Image (cartoon, rainbow, N blue to C red; front, side, top):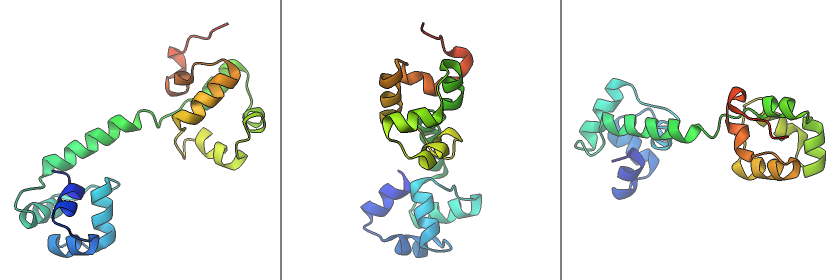
Length: 143
């Protein structure tokens, strides 16, 4: 069972969960529940004991694996695709009314490229939106 599922099932706040599992505070509980941080072995033992093995180390491993699978669409090759098709970021931002600053974070991989925006760009420039998530060597340029 995921840590967040346990928290909801037990009807606990994040602070109550942190206290029960001997965590440093509610922020640790939130991070472990959301999967933005993974607990060290001793913390996992505390969690397993506090939840009577309802949450185990394997649950955190599974959560990590699921998150990595989802992150595959978060990796983007937008700069490479733009270079391949001769498109500039400035041009795209103006044409599609995107914030230049926000889009720059996407291009520099600090933020994920949403599928919605990938489809908008693809439609505007006749590009398969999935190309933004493929390594450049796998993209076949359509003439």
